[in-house]
Image 1: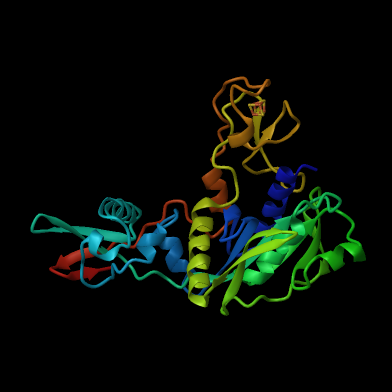
Image 2: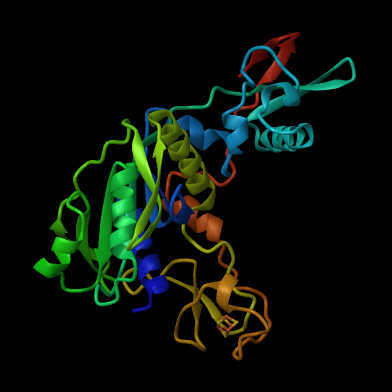
Length: 321
Ligand code: SF4
């Protein structure tokens, strides 16, 4: 099975088992991770209520507080124009509130940024262990940096002792059947230390390894950024192809889904990479009517259009939630 279809089947299965957020293809400090699960932290519900989208990292990391309002350029670590754009986006999302004072625009947080991120789990998909590519290096990078609480390799292959010997010890191994959506645990993952400093392996050749120390505080920041991107992104492709040959479908064990199936190719396709006039089977049409976001909202805690947390101003510097 192609890696893309395998990955969609893995995500559908993980989503059905998770009470958190599943997302795919997210960049970390050193590489792109196939699939990530954000397990709920203590204030997960608050995060659900703020916005369905990713809150800009620089807004979260800014000195804009919930108390006194301030000017974006004084509190956001970016050039003035960019700070304004970030503040605008945060206001649009309902994370900041804006007010005018003496002709200037001031912002404050509508809510304290919640402690919503619990454990982070990373999953590396390698359906065929006979074609490992740079799998071993990628997994060594994960162990060395310790950004995730747990990292699991998922494969369709029969896993031999020789395979296991090449996979770093803390990495869990699961065998996955994409027809039935079932996992078989070959080896449990060991927890990685996410609160200690880590080492980012940037480049590795037979003669040279480039590394960079990463502090515990920086790891916390990277984890939060990753979780925010995961929250906004999810794992389903955003749009279904505008093509007569496209259907909304799901993997064999859960066909009622909103994944892009192409009847011409007889498989799932990645619309961003495969669909359009360059495809020989392309036949322009309205995309299938299934709403990808509705499916996500139905099956996960994620809320498509939350009420938001914007407060009502009842006096100068006084707000009601
Ligand atoms: S554009 Fe090509 S790959 Fe995409 S759905 Fe149409 S026929 Fe399939």
